[in-house]
Amino acid sequence: MKNDIELYKSFFQKRDDYYLEKLDKYNQSKKFTFNYATLIFGIFWFLYRKMYIEVIIIYSLISLESLFENLFLKRLIGEERTVIFSLCVTVLFIITTGFSGNLLYLKKAMRTVSKAQKKYPDFENQNSYVAKKGGTSFIVISIIIISLVLILALQ
Image (cartoon, rainbow, N blue to C red; front, side, top):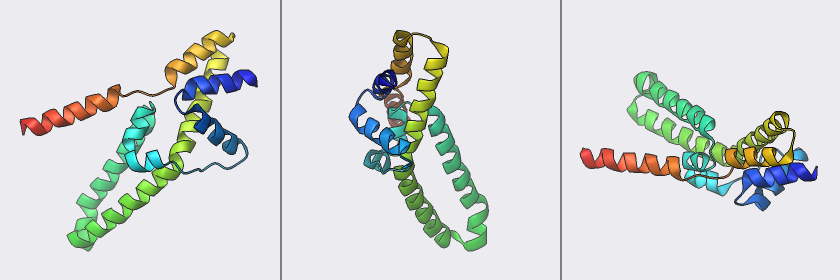
């Protein structure tokens, strides 16, 4: 059990005390806890926490919802009501993200720790694997922001 805590600390790295508390609540069946950073930064928070698969899924859902609005809803209820619908969906999405960010991050941490324990028999390799897969990164966020700035500058 002590090794598990150490592995989670290696995964969480920054703010490990916060996420260990959330993990404890999760283990006590309190699955959904609110995360202000997820609410404010949205998809960028997921990128910062190296949750790339989750970003692809979220982006796909947003794209499908936008496609639905543009192809069907505008014709069905008109552009003005579609804007109101879109605003409501956006607010609901932001609130849902705020409540599910910690859960998705904890699930990723649990999968990573479990995979490390199955893959490596010794703690040092497990810890190294978990530290590499966890933590935070500004690289992808930086690339996206630089790309957006370049696109806007070239227009």
